[in-house]
Length: 209
Image 1 (cartoon, rainbow, N blue to C red):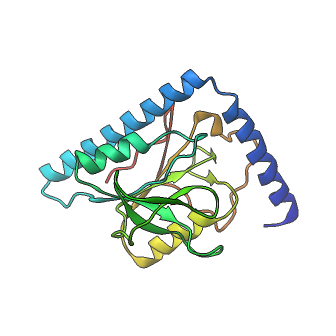
Image 2: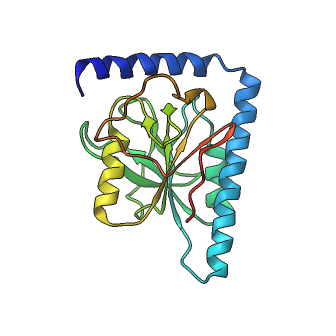
């Protein structure tokens, strides 16, 4: 990335974080509830169709531990594990320039603080994910994502694709992250997401499993 593009990305992140912070807390809570509801419905609908077609259904979901500023996914992750029997995993940072590893998580799983202050499960590696939920600060309607600048998810999703294991990647974002008209230019290494879900609905249409 050249210096101008890097500076533009830094400015975009600052702007998007400001917009995110300015949300009404009531809208934030309501928006997170709507995101969880739409995610649950999307997965349940796809699983029903796949079962009717006698096709394999997804079992492994790589999610993320929401920070206070992000849409809160934790209640849905708990429901998926306890009521639906899915294998849920969370990302673990293993090295600064390496892909993330996904380790198994459950409501009783011990957690520790990772290098960036985000909680990580103290467990072992999970199965390769069928679905990856990706924390997304900014997005375009084409599925381009702006993250927090570490490049972890670009590396991780590229490595998963290279492994040959089929999966869908869904960005989870606030609608304030829409970068339309903000001059964002995706880079060659940026991984384009299959769908993006916000508190206002699917900004990039929901993918079919």
